[in-house]
Length: 313
Ligand code: NCD
Image: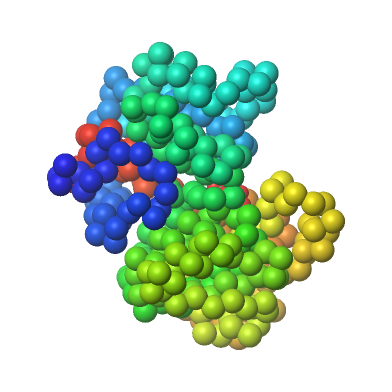
């Protein structure tokens, strides 16, 4: 359906499935919502959203929850596996079937297993939104990351973006890189070798013709960057604890590390942060991460409105 920019009834599994044009239309709708914040209120009254979070979450869960409530939807599901029958060994398949029986109109799923959202989408006819599948993808985070950068600079083309931290296990890093490949950007992946971007991601970028280089030390590149996207080490996903010991605390983005940065540099972080991003940056003009987190709400509200067919454009 052209009117909905091809979001209607659609699964949101990988950011790779979206064209630049579709993303731009989504961002335009988010801007529209920001201009008239009540314009989507109650649009989806009577519909039921099942939020199934098999992994902990603060921002993603609560922003989907508030978004669904703003749209007038009823909400069911669970915020953590500890409070559901998943802790008794119930499978993803049985869980989605069950909620479908309760009348769920869409699923928002976070799961530790890569590919889980895709698998869930194959077991139900209702739209599935991937809220993070293991170390692989986090498409709605990438959408809000792009939206935030675009808002800060008024554009995405021409920007030099550094993505720093755990690029191997961090799903936000790979989804952001995929998303940015729709634009004319220069990417630098800043990480210790053990946590560098996965080969399949670099291969995809290469095929899309996106320039990406790898770097170990932020100091070598920080002066040329427009955006620095910082991520935490995904301790829970590193299989060997001795590997974690080798990399923990290896980088810390603080004022000293940004000494050579352009005054216009914007620092983003999907949050939660641990020790990789110093609180001393919070009061500087570099800090864009709380603005970024806040963008999750209008973005997810618009996305659900488009997927479930009541959207503004
Ligand atoms: C991220 C995630 O869950 O992948 N958090 C989020 O959704 N904002 C990042 C992380 O956990 O490090």
